Image (cartoon, rainbow, N blue to C red; front, side):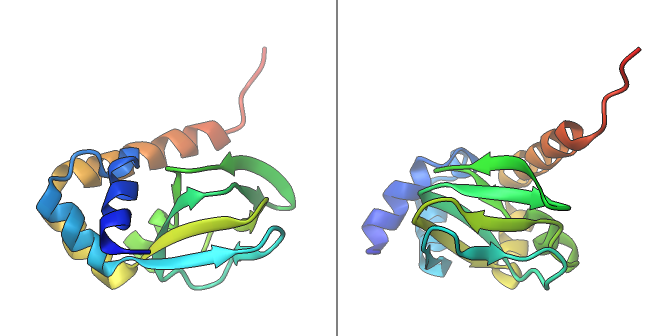
Length: 140
């Protein structure tokens, strides 16, 4: 994907909406395109997490303990937990259809997060939202 196209794609991703053109260009140079065919495993629970992925095209299923817990599409991201703590992946993610992602390596994400409070806050808010959605609900 050409740098110009990458920047246009990044502008459409809510996670990166607070970044200015210079920051988007810097980010665009660091991103690597990854393509997955329908049914392909994108990340596997328990494996080492080395990057943050943003879906540009296609759809993916997030599974924990064999059950689907989320469906991701363009603009959604995954891999943020492993990027922050170097821990293993917490879920299996499978391409539901042919899917294109942009991947940013963990060692490249951290300095960007340290420099951009808005981006860090958005990522943390999404992590909290996902955590709340996964909590079992108590019904009286």
